Image (cartoon, rainbow, N blue to C red; front, side, top):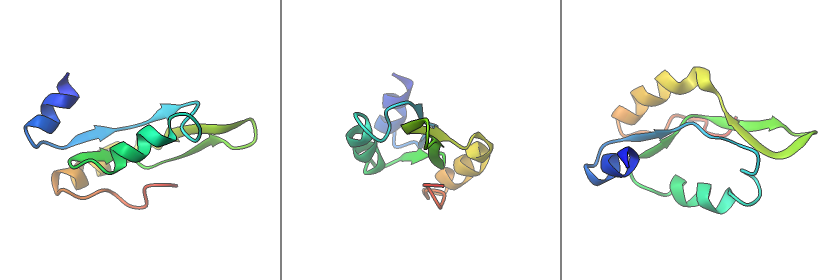
Length: 81
């Protein structure tokens, strides 16, 4: 509900993903969120490409820089690391 309230009030919302099926079943949902206004992602990449080929995890050390850029209405780059 807090996420929806942020979007409703035109405030930035930050997402740090951690999912086992980010490159399979959830890929479509991530794509839709990437296109949303005021939704910003902490840079992320594959967790373990060999053992968990569809798993994604955020680079948690990038949360603060992501917030700083989101407050400027910018997505931190590169997003996929």
